[in-house]
Length: 358
Image (cartoon, rainbow, N blue to C red; front, top):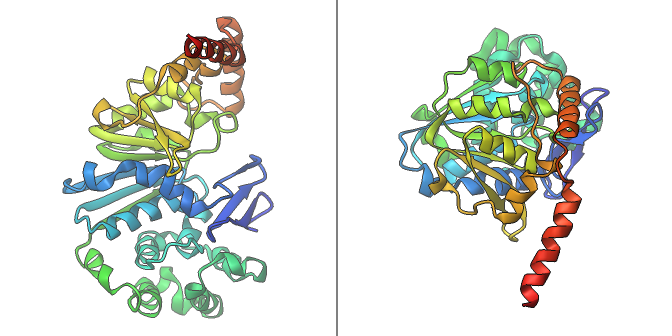
């Protein structure tokens, strides 16, 4: 447990997941936090084909959580031996999750990734001794990497010696030479070349995207489900993301929502569907250019947008509360008097059956 609202859990692929009691929603799929990141966020990017030739790749990770999308992305970059300079801006309101992320048992074999993250965020650990107490708690032991457990105990026992605040070089030296270098020799060139630059933003993502300069090649959008956190799924949010992204860029999300897809398209994006290795729908892709979309939305998807299910959220100034957004959304749905999604689906299936019988 992190606090009274967030619990750790073990997912089926052996990676640690989280459950948020306040929102009553999971951060990751129960079948595997790491697997979900690979299937829904990284594999659809087709990095070798779409981005390997870029000298610089700039990534925006919205709702970073404990970092699976960024970690899976970095793992793929290293495995494919892509030599681009990587800049990742991570947006996460809960500072503790970001600070815990390098230590999580994540089922990612390359420990250099944890070190890269730790190097980036260690300067933010001032006054965060509670983070290390969470990791050393007996009830949480199984959720963290064994390779970092000894270090965490040392931090608790000798905080002035190992604290990143008082001795950051020693802090990183200890992690690197004890837990990373022996297992990741083939990845050292990425560190030597300074290939990775990672910066966290600990505030409402809506405020962050107004401050960012843009030029993003890749955007991960991994917020809680739209009806539980409408603040990060509004038309106005997507309009701003469109402004921040390059012409040849990709936004990926796990959501299949007709309202989300409608908002994306209204904001100017070309939108398509994502499928996992078993050919099951697993999310949505949005691009400025349709040439990057392999599976475009079909007649059914577009028709669903014209029903009650396709009414998107509005957040004009990007500062409304979730309650205000949902209230306005409900009122607008009533005023539009659109057909229900169930009636559309029934009609669509009937038409398909009739066409097949001819």
